[in-house]
Image (cartoon, rainbow, N blue to C red; front, side, top):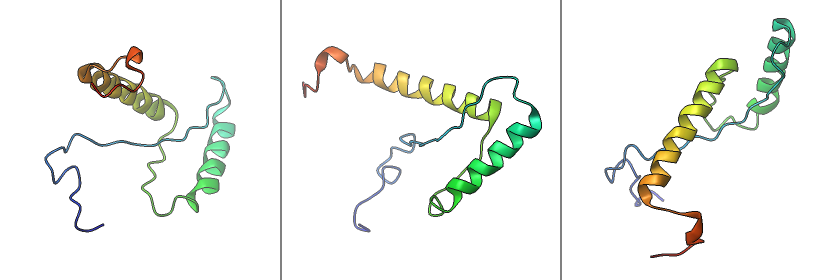
Length: 91
């Protein structure tokens, strides 16, 4: 829909979202095993996600990204005044 402006074009440049997929393993997995698992996971999803940006974040990078996104969206939800008690209210 080329006639519909993006959120950034409307002045909401901060309104972005990421979708992430993670393969989590128990801490202490040997580095060579972790690397093989990581490469296999990347290869398995690469073809399916060709049209999308794939960052390839792993380990502490992914952990940091998850933490940042939880904090970011938590602030936005809190600032919106949304409450679980609203249960979809439009007030």
